[in-house]
Length: 281
Image (cartoon, rainbow, N blue to C red):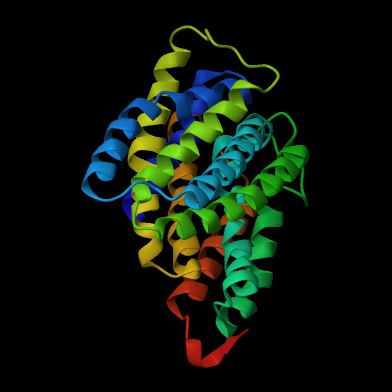
């Protein structure tokens, strides 16, 4: 999960450097990874059994949510910056355990509940809600887009973990990417010939984010609890902030950095002090 998170972290930088529409970025980051995933899924199918029809439908639904997340996230990259967007989208750390409680009756630790206000406060500070920030074209609108993306992202992660329980995680992830590719191809603003160097950056996103990053997450997710899954993925915004500062010259304000610290610290405490004997739900 940690390796996958670090693979995903650079995606925001690659997308920003590609300078293409959200639909184009989402389509190519998924489509370019599909052939390699098809080979891996075919190998898994030969070794095990085909994915059940119900699991295929769940994976397809997860793909739609992944596409929605990616489209909104890409839009937010230009509005609030690649580093800030990665932090804001990881508001999923708040949502995923709540979904697990409501649907699977997976208890939530009291420490997690206590850390919720800390993490939410961090999100608001990171988005520059209380100050005028210079990163991005519209930081406030970017924050809204990133938080809606976080909701799609959270439900996607919840479904991803559930599809992994079928025992055929690669096949499930393959159908997720096919579904996401189809959704992106139908979106307005899709450019099937973005040219170079955009295709090069999108190929880097496909390899780092989809083949290495999300595939590793898909394989690891079923073995961990929802809270631990969501929290380890907080390595994504940490890595994204560093790479955005290094390669895109994005320099967040002190309040934004403080907000990032609050989010990451709150998530770390919530995960590492998870005690089922003192849980709610």
